[in-house]
Length: 293
Image 1 (cartoon, rainbow, N blue to C red):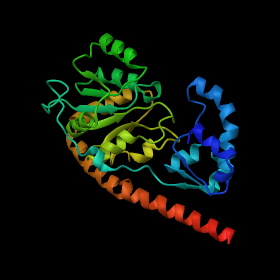
Image 2: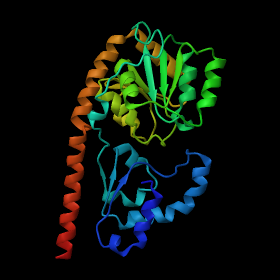
Image 3: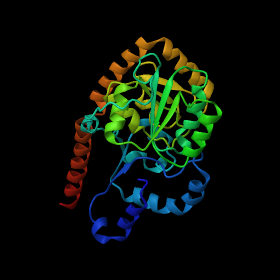
Image 4: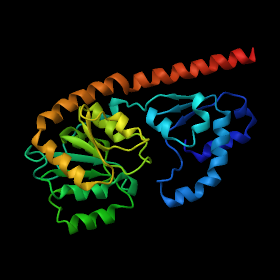
């Protein structure tokens, strides 16, 4: 969830006879989400709540998201937290992909942002934050915000500093992850529920600079001062200051990257996560069989 196609299960007798587990990736709407989403949510909510009422268990990806979700308020007793996991095989290709003459030089701090070019990602804030720094930024992704980002880069004369890569293959993304110093995800609201691009960075031993979003899993995923750093959302000045601080403290980046890799191995490797989900489902199935005996 959110996934409107799941609503068909409410009408299928065969589906209603078996226990349901809902994997809750994000709320469908929240007060800070886009207006059109908030307007449509009253039509979506009755079906969403009907699914939650029938579910035996709801898996939520982080404690903060569970605590901040209005949709899950009535169902806290049937919720369990199991984080998203990552199979590192998708990161095995590390083909080099230089973005600019300075990208491989090691002189400039190299930042990477990966994701859809959509307003809640906060990429406009990140581009503005680059102006008072000497860092290099590569942005991987496509979306409706591309034209606006291109105009902003041109307006601020950052074309030698900020590079829009567009959609990229796994090999290109992995090459950039391998070459960058850290990943930046300056999202603006809880539409950023977790942050898979940050998880990819952690798996490759890279720290992350992220927004401190109340009720999002993002600042829970990244431990401030240990595996990365938090900044206030929608604050280009604070972001610039942190980038400039990191530029002067490269040793902190390396140490945080090592801790990020260890945190990934301990909590987010796909084998560890899948074990938790299998154990949970087996418990539900056993309880259901006992009920029906």
